[in-house]
Image 1 (cartoon, rainbow, N blue to C red):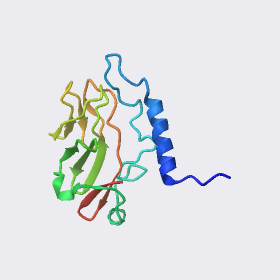
Image 2: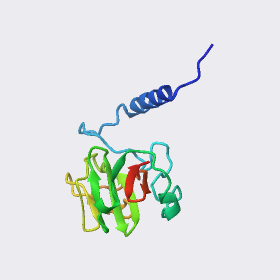
Image 3: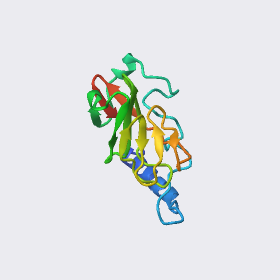
Image 4: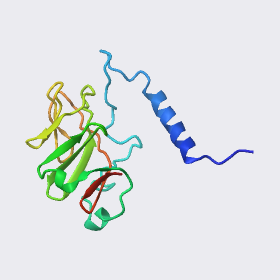
Length: 161
């Protein structure tokens, strides 16, 4: 007789499979490299702005948050953003009320970006810069955009989704 899978079992199995799939992902210099696709592990675009990339409606923003609170909306400057090193995520606000989230791992050689300034997310290792609006490359050597991350804006709080 088999028992139904628990959430813990499913998560542990998925984590193990992900770890196994990452074996040998290091770069030729021993460093890590970013995934080939900027999409989330599920392969879906999961930016907070909706599954289709459109801006989040005020009604959708008011839905109950599901993850850990990252910041207050007032912590993210309009036209700028903030790097959350522990969560390896960057949250930006390209225009008032429009919040975006990206991986903080540079797609060039896996360094963590360290600042958001002058409309770009900047990597300190080799000078790559990414646009705050969509994570696309503004200046190489990176050739791929930052991966989109999922957040939820609820009232004046920004949560991991």
